[in-house]
Length: 175
Image (cartoon, rainbow, N blue to C red):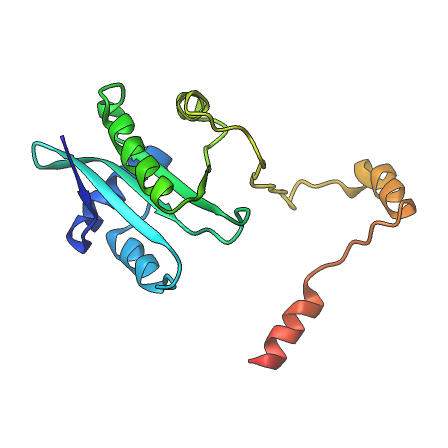
């Protein structure tokens, strides 16, 4: 196993590993475009782990604006067929060493449905700080009447609901 710094020529392999692990397709072009958009003043390092010439693990340590001050964000993906063979641990050691050199704390995002990755992160000392999730509402089957009591209670407590119509108008007038 060899860990080395990511190069643009690794984008196809990186995208393949990330897509396989997350189930969210990304292309090499999209990955490289994301890299090109990064502010060079903000910290970002990527590594790949190769075995027999194939990239089987990837790690990214970077500044993420929604993490607390003094934190860097970590993404680490290992091909499912390579899990349990020290790939994640090797990448973790690399990320941890760089984090120490940057005198930062560490944050990561783990999918709720990925029990194996949650256990991996917990064994390394990560604790849940925030819970982000997609909140989707199927408007073709939504029945507002069932939610009227909760809406009335929220309004009585001073909660204000608004849509983005005004923001959209502002956006259109600015451009």
